[in-house]
Image (cartoon, rainbow, N blue to C red; front, side, top):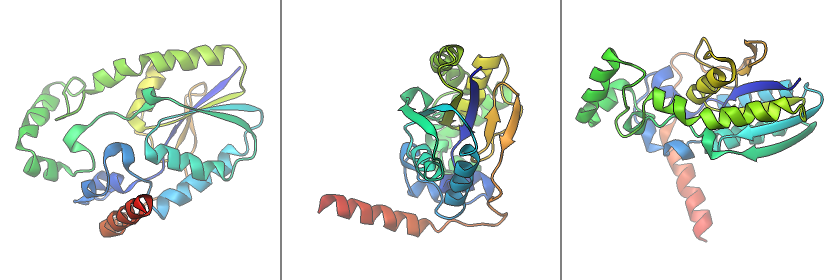
Length: 233
């Protein structure tokens, strides 16, 4: 029987908005373009690769097109040497949190006064509250139904020993719901590997961001400018 593992991307600078309440991280990149963090994120991805390298058999990797997922996959694959193929699916793109992405709660309320509607709605009906400029959690749940059924269909053929879904925390939660009838009972950690069949976490990296860690925002902004210059030469 095919084992299906749901995997969250490595730590990103944007994650620090909630992890350490750091402001200004939205300046680094848009949601789809956010890289993984250069120290802890890379270490987590490499650790993940070592774990995945222990899997034996034929592996199908289905990945979100978002840069942080693709970058996590790149580092993880540098530690993998098995029999695998990769497919990228736009249906695995992350939950659209609109103007809330990479902002602290205080930042959102200050910069986008219209977000008050979301916070008011969330108190009454969290799952149907629509993020300002984004979507609701129940909309995400509906959106990922088709890719979940596709994963289930592939798994039923037993063509692969493992299906590794490289994605995002919220999307993985709802994928698991459509695959098993229930969501994941916790917020997935960065580079966590969750077994759909066993209903449990199989791996969490040792490298984790400490309390008080601050991202050097300018370093990422300057790095992005350098890449743009290289592309324009």
